[in-house]
Amino acid sequence: MLNHFRSHSVLALTLLLAACQSQTVPIQGQNTRLQGQNSVRQASAQPGNQAIAGETIVRLKAGVSPQQYARENRLELVMPIGLNMYLFRGASGVDVLRRDERSLWAEANTRLTLPVQEARLPGSMPPRTRTDLPDDPLLPAQYGFTVTGTDKIWRTQPGRPEVIVAVVDSGIDGSHPEFQGQLVPGFDFTLKEPAPGGNVDGYGHGTHVAGVIGARSNNGIGVAGVAPGCKLMPVRIFNDFGHSEGARSAAAVIWAVDHGAKVINASWGSPMEGEASKAAYQYAIAKDVVFVAAVGNSGKEDTQYYPGASEEAIGVAATTDIDGWASFSTFGDWVDIAAPGKAILSTYPMSKGNGYRIMEGTSMAAPFVTAAAALVRSQHPDWTQAQVRAQLERTAKDVIMTGKDKYAGHGRVDIARAVLE
Ligand SMILES: [Ca+2]
Ligand SMILES: [Ca+2]
Image 1 (cartoon, rainbow, N blue to C red):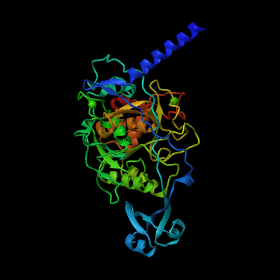
Image 2: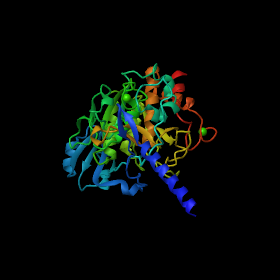
Image 3: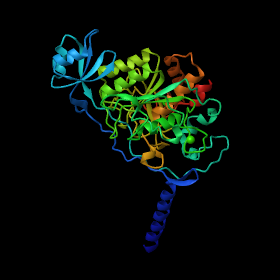
Image 4: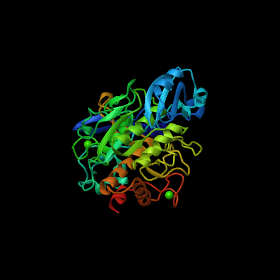
């Protein structure tokens, strides 16, 4: 009995040491602690809980003055969204405003959620075994880089700077060394008066997503992005607490389209697809922009999450390092494609630690597909968004079940095949 107890103690101690070691990896020659994100699991919110009291989005008929409309309905005009849509605040609710003959429609403004959750600490930092990869010291822990075939194309196909990728999220930390020279001017919709900016991130999610797409590669520090030759456009809609809503996301998508984005990444969503959001997504497609979105982290089939489940977006599910289903990933017929989303190492705001963190979710999977779309657009500038989407789906690796399935859609994105074939 005593021996039995001792052997367990020795085993427990060994595991503890392994866990401690796994958190320490070298960045710029120093020992740096990698942290999992301690975030609240995405709420499985019911549609009714998502409405924001006193805030209504209205699409006005052509020629109607929003100021006059606000005055006569005793509303505050909070923000223009674009496409004749406006966000109003005040006691006159959806029912009243629908009856105003100057309204095409009216709907409640709704909260958005972020499909990200706690990440487990990784196994120990893998040794660097290959010399044909970028020199970024954390690359051996970025399994998504090799699983997606980015290791085969990084030197010849880093992407072109005229392909602008909008990251509609919590901003991108512009002070981070991995984003020096990577950003184009963006916009900040979290401010009371939306204004140029977006290159700050008080929450961290957007900086993590952006690093997967476009962290500087082969610069001797940190991680390597998939499409570092493309430019990132920070469009900030989530505040320092990770809160945002439908009006801002719709305005942000329209703004990104109007300012030259060729691909948009939406690692967020809502159980409801409102009219304003739908109009914004349709606008992106009509203007030939590739629109990529996470399908959500419910781990179940019964929760459609928009824009991931919308027909306009390429809906991205999450897979693991061995192309298995990531058990948090929402599944269903609306899943179009999959990408690594389990335990993803990427950039994090410098104000929140050492600049790198492991997070997981379909939030982290979507940017692999976004980056793949940006590389295909770099290679084939004359292709339409529909052609880019078809190429990503056609070249994806069939995983999980034979043929298209509910877990990985057409398969796990194969970036080398998408770019080279
Ligand atoms: Ca780097
Ligand atoms: Ca399959």
